[in-house]
Length: 230
Image 1 (cartoon, rainbow, N blue to C red):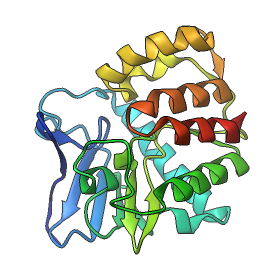
Image 2 (cartoon, helix red, strand yellow):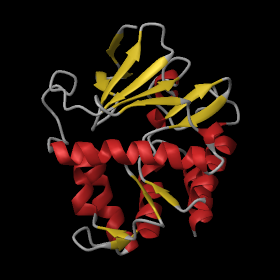
Image 3 (cartoon, helix red, strand yellow):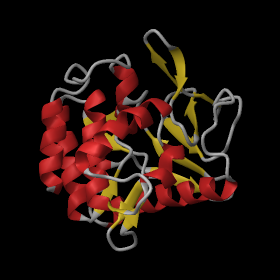
Image 4 (cartoon, one colour):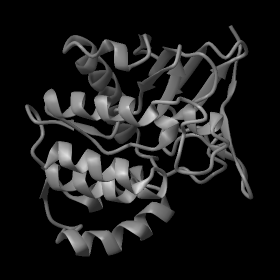
């Protein structure tokens, strides 16, 4: 099976990398999406943010653990089916074409023209996270694929679990966050009383994530998501 680099075509920007950390690949028949946790300079156009091999390995393990945790706790229907190649640090996900962001033309905050009930489905996924004690900070619309009218969530490399993790500093995870979003976060951290240099509860950072992603989703759904974690 042949794989090609997978990009999102963003209006006024052109082809942009689909993810800041791993290298994104899509099979010719668009049925398999590959998260390749490899620092590919060509794909990232020499703008690589995660260059430490040990950190890349940690992100791969978090992705695997997050997917398995969803599957093993009764929410396997909310993620794509997947296979893991530990040796090559590749995760192969069964999909049905491009991600939701790409299907929406990489613009706007409403995705009802892609999936009519996307808001209800997304909130159901967030409720699942809350139920199993997960905090997921990678919420971009490119983190969702649509399979038979159902949203399937990926990008668990930036997720944490109550049973293992308690506090993190925002400063320690800036390599996972785009430069534009970092700038946007600073104003919001002040509003929520977050010091980026000090350990903060995961619940507090989760609320910050929902606030930040109002740039990609309408305010109502992000406020509803906050209520789930309140």
